Length: 175
Image 1 (cartoon, one colour):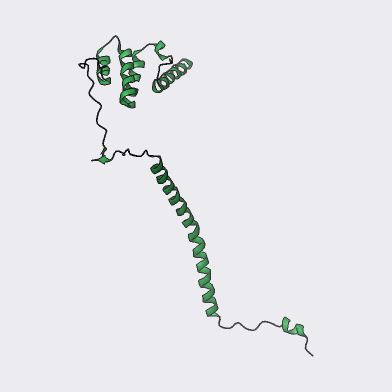
Image 2 (cartoon, rainbow, N blue to C red):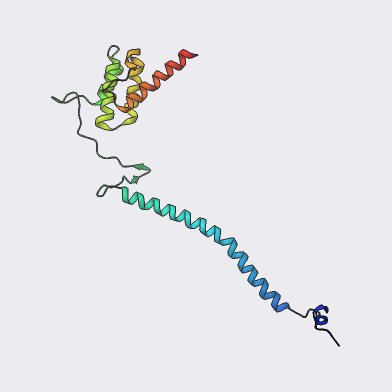
């Protein structure tokens, strides 16, 4: 009389040729591994592309309508035409910033005032911040210590320069 547990406790039958099963299992495993390798990289690429697209879209939406962006010509950007020439020979017209800067360079007495006026003209009428910065620096170099006090009529650039000069003097006095 055989017991039903004998069948369960018996050793398993010898393995047969399961090469087809192994091949199918290998192909499925390789597909999963490849997918797990590519999905994170595709997600990063999609995020970068989405960020780039969002940046382009925001630039397109923020640009004012009807105005064109200067296009490079020969490696340089085209500039708008210069404003109408303002020279010292024009009757009733104020001298241009360039002329004021030249006068300040040649004048030993009113250098600070002329450089300051030239810097104001560069900043306000011509929009040339670099030239205004140069003139304001020259005005502070030619001026006295009282010229370093920030006044109500100073523009933002001159205020920043005066503040920086005051801090430089304070640090120099500490050392």
